[in-house]
Image (cartoon, rainbow, N blue to C red; front, side):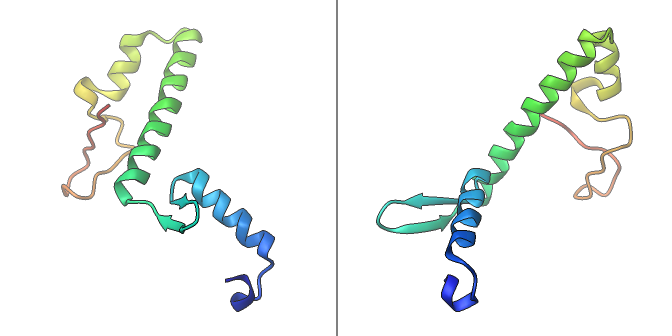
Length: 99
């Protein structure tokens, strides 16, 4: 591929490595690289974001924010009340966050 596109093969290998670490592709030894299923990528990204959210919530509690205040900001049952997220698939301004 590198020769066809006139790109250094090291650059191609770095790109493949990056895509694999991000979960967009996977390697099968002796067979090649394949695109990951969209759900696999979505699941991985969801877990990454939930891990970050957990760290943020823990830090907010450490800094003195009451867990009930955090729950109020996020909303009961995970409904985001702050208006910062918009779910365009429902045609309204609500988004549900689930774990």
